[in-house]
Length: 282
Image 1 (cartoon, rainbow, N blue to C red):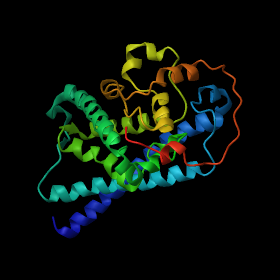
Image 2 (image 1 turned 180 degrees about the vertical axis):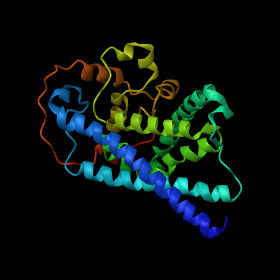
Image 3 (image 1 turned 45 degrees about the vertical axis):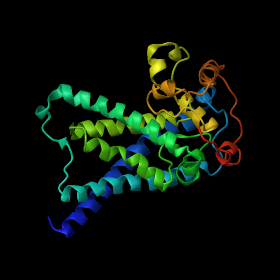
Image 4 (image 1 turned 90 degrees about the vertical axis):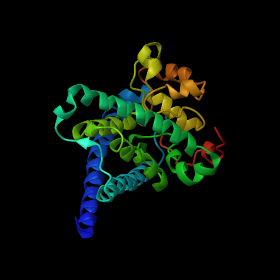
């Protein structure tokens, strides 16, 4: 393949991944926004983790940053074309019977586990005072996050987040559709985690699943407090490393036991959260 063809293929790959990601992201975030912030806003108000609505200007900012992040994801995908041209091929495969249905399912689970560890440790690193302002501060401008905050990153952080893709496709043998399933899962979990509404029942934290799986309250508390709750899917690394916020269980209980009818507070300005300006090492 000539260099010209490689460049055209890389540009095509960038566009396809960025546009495909945008479609899935816009659909999922749009549906969650429509349900919680429009159609069923009054009915869902009791489950709003931070009772106030997002500040004026916050959502357009989150959408703009999400579009830039998706472009970074697309460029990362396009870069794999040049890497393949250099002789390093991914471990993606086509016929499912090459590894069987058992591995098809196991590869998805393995990707989720690897991504959870990758996210926790890169996330904690980005909270180091020397990196926070340069890399991660943009995401924390959403102190009261909405579904559109899921991909609201600075460009450097977007490339860090996109790094999970090459890591997986070059190390884990995966069917193409297994990788797409994983990508759909991570977008969906991220959107619900940033929705600003608690979707789990009040008894959830008392179950084995509640001790294992993170809730929207867990991540909303991270956006508020900044210095705790670094996990993505699972509450394993936070437990092992002692980085769960002490208010997590109490906040979850408070959100899930509110009376069903709650007045909606008025919209306010969108200030930079004080905790973002004064972040310290975790």
